[in-house]
Image 1 (spheres, rainbow over the protein chains, first blue to last red):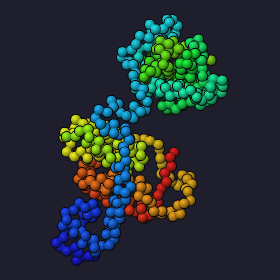
Image 2 (image 1 turned 60 degrees about the horizontal axis):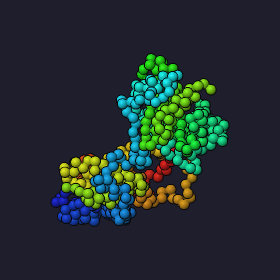
Image 3 (image 1 turned 180 degrees about the horizontal axis):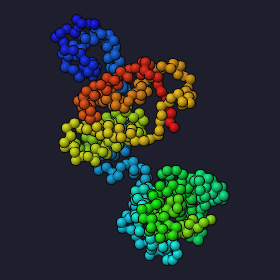
Image 4 (image 1 turned 135 degrees about the horizontal axis):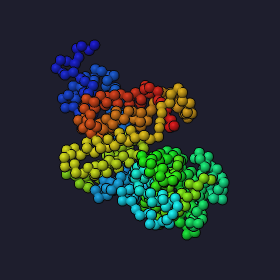
Length: 299
Length: 167
């Protein structure tokens, strides 16, 4: 068909030519040739007219964005000195909480800050970090989630908990059911903390229980319990012998600091625990020891 | 040489393209913000960048492709086994003519990018090839398929529109 066209002097017209014609990308001479070519092919001409219409409509639809006032965050990012040290989405996610997981290599002198004696002291003394298969990254994630959950819920004056301590029976029944294991909040009156209640939260892999306590000064303390140990890090570390030598111990206590929130966390059997508070590290260490003592006791 | 003001001057165009690509104001601005920050992080390379526009759009392209690949809410195309989602009865014709925005969202991202850079950004084909890191022949074939697909969708000739459900 159309064997007489285009005339031999005109190079063959390709699909690319047609698009370049629509986009005005051809030399003037070629543009004229294509126009002549299309004059004899109404279907192609119609098709190209549709492409032109798309172009007009796209501009009509999106050109108004050019005149919008860009949000401040974009203007800030466009300026050189405003480049944040960490990506903005992480900053936003952590809501200004700086991540400062204490390096396992440096360790810290916990054993001096605690009363000696008993299993707890042994556990503390064994707190040589980063050798029980707890990776800093995974454990840091667990501790960070606990700290963020603490930072989000503890200052809430109206709804710090989902179920309050007046309904502790219901709280225990509910959380135990959802966690698939008995969840009983430890009693920390001796440490000055009273149970306020608790809630269920999403963790890294599944549900997490959070219990909230408060002392008479209004300082909050949250206990974050995950029954997915993979969430915390591998509980079964490579050094089984060492592990077995510490009675009923899966990992040592670890300490992390997220902004103003101090976190102690550890793995005990199938559970990962994190205790968060803005209280001093020494206070938190004592409470952690008590929590560990109570939860480790068969009930 | 690029300075403070010149990166600011790209913001409106980056936003326009991003908005057309992503079709969600916040996500689109997130993409622009990531692009700007990536560009600043690589500002030591600016001296060797011949075409700042192609370079910035190539950063955005890479971020977008990464973002698209990143797992988000899992969406599945409905099939015969999926229960029907009630659709508002306003749609009388199964082959309804789609508006441009809806049709655009149904294009594969590869075709959409080429189409938007050529039409909205009015970029030369060679610059599109550079920005997307593909041969110019691929640019032309994606442009051709994208335009034709868009036309089909808008004229109601296309394959039936498949609803997506969020699982």
